[in-house]
Amino acid sequence: MKKEIYISKGVGETRIAVKENGKLAELHVDKESKERTVGNIYKGVVENVIPGMQAAFVNIGEGNNAFLPFSEISDPELIADRKPKSKNSKEINVLLSPGQEIIVQVIKEPFDNKGARVTTNLSIAGRFIVLIPKSKYVGVSKKMQDRYERRRLKKIAFDMKKHGLGIIIRTVAEGKTDQQIQNDYASLEEKYNGLMKLSEKSDAPAVIHNDLEMTSSVLRDLISDKVEKIVVDSKDDYKKIQKMVKDDALEIGDALQHYRKRVPLFKDTGIDNDMIKLLRKKAWLKSGAYLIIERTEAMVVVDVNSGKFVGKKAHEDNSLKINLEAAKEVAVQLRLRHLSGLILIDFIDMVNAENRKKVYLEMKKELRKDRAKVAVSEISEFGVLEMTRERTGLSIIDSLTERCDTCNGDGRIISKDTLLTRIDYWLRDYKQKNRDIRLKLYLNPEIAHYLKEEKKRDYISLMWKNFVYLKVIDDISMGKNVFRFTRMSDPTDITHEIGT
Image (cartoon, rainbow, N blue to C red; front, side):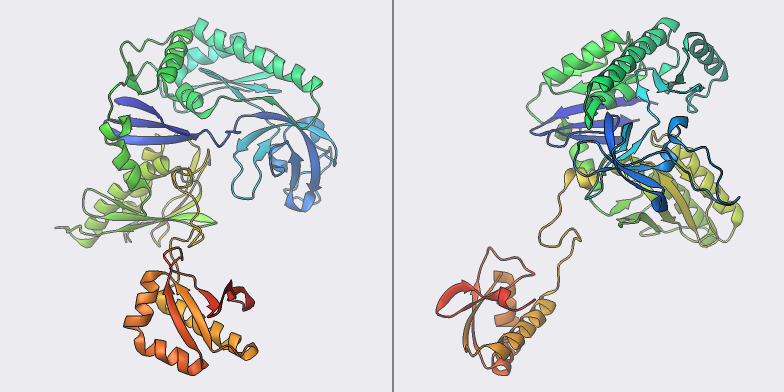
């Protein structure tokens, strides 16, 4: 697979794009205003322990208290030696109490009003391995297919492993020498010993280990000998990558390039256009079919539509063709948009169970390219596939957009007629308590024109019905879903006097 990495540093953010075989496969946005916390390790203080929720809340000194599920606690010193109440009970009894100091690591960034999600199962990622303190585990990435290479790397891991420090060999370690892997292990061991010493000296809450900022973290995971091109438009980032390549003894030849043109890198490569498409709900397929991707509070829903596709075969065969194409594109879109949590994919109905199986297997195959953890169930008889995808950071929409003050993030505002109905209700309530017969009504110019011209009869009716003279005033500063009233002789806003 031909892999290329493009890194563009702008005002306030750095954007990283990964192309696979010429197509955009991954996109990361690193904002300077938003500090990354995933991977950071803290000495925290337990604030609340709630057995009913099977969770505790921990003060780590970063905004809202972090959420620690009991399932994320494996340290024997923190788990009570008691049997469950019944055979079917999955409740975990822990030895935690308010005020207790505890070392935790962030596994999910805080979002909206929710604090970060944390674990006591620490892991420190290096270039080629992941160190797991207080563990005996030794493993090799499941994405590495060559069994002989897996055996070789596992032997290296067992030979260098020390008591109480587990090891996972990462995919990028494939083909690396014993010395390269041992150097990475020694560096991580030193890092772990250092953070434990810092923990003893620090007063909680305190950060005792800062993981790499996003740009370095993504590069650590992506740069390998197989990358054919790394294009960077920042001199500082160019030098940083040069050092990383040298330190890790990576043989990337002339892959690293410093982009110097005046045309922005992402515009020159067409990545900007691809980014704009990611903000839309609709994603087109080559066949003319399309996906509708909707995010809700609880889940992500993907609807597969035949669209402009005109098949020449039977309905079942056409449905299978579209669904196989859609399965590939859904996997692509999930990676690009950083969509996570529970995901429901509504494929076009297929009667044949064997065809549903084919689409399911295609989906599983495409998801193997995803670095995030996923779990997939088979397609139900209703044509719905359920899956979950690990949240590794903000979605692309949350990274590139902000909540709209007008629509409160819904993407829609009330209709013109609904607004006029609210104005009518306001006038009725107002006239019950006041005797004013002359008022000014401030509206967005488009809404004002609609009322005075297209709804002229209703405008007159509004005045007669409420026995009031309304002078409608164009106000370009007004949103299309709001209105403002003042008395004719007094510019003071009186809208708030009546609930709207």
